[in-house]
Length: 97
Image (cartoon, rainbow, N blue to C red; front, side, top):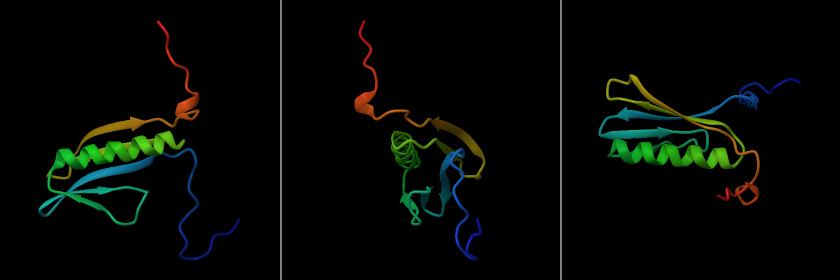
């Protein structure tokens, strides 16, 4: 299969979707594969919370995701994994004690 020049490469279904929280002037940016427009936050904690929520949505939709948190020096300081759900939430078994 040939790709069109300038078109994005086909997505590898085994690859994680990365959601990054990175510092920018005046705040924090959340970059995700869900949208071309990055999200901006004044608080790093709020940016991290949103990144984790997006990753949880991806996992619920059947895609593995990683949240990558960077500090003000742009060093990677944290990573969280969210694994794809094998079944819709309504079909997951309920634990009974």
